[in-house]
Image 1 (cartoon, rainbow, N blue to C red):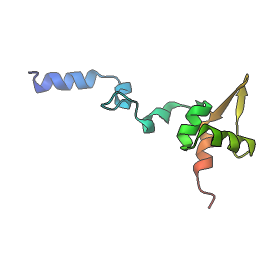
Image 2: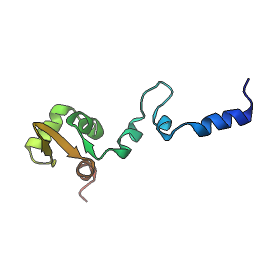
Image 3: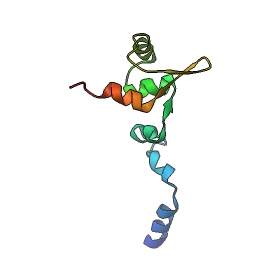
Length: 88
C-alpha cells in the first residue's frame, strides 16, 4: 500500500492534460473547447449542441461566420460564442 506522501507525488507529477479526462477515459466536454480557437463543423455543432445539418442551415442563412480552408469550413470559437449570447 502506498503512503500518503507517495500518492501526493504521483498526483503532483501528472500533467494538466490528465485533468481533461474523466474516470471513463473520455474527455470532459467543458474542458475540450477551452484551448480550441478554430473548430471543424462537427466540433462546432457539438459546441452549439445542434446537429451538423442544423449548423449548415445556420451557415446558409448567414447567421454564423465561416472561413474556408480549401474545401473545408472552419469556425472561430468567438463567433460561436456570439451566437450563443442573448441579444438583449
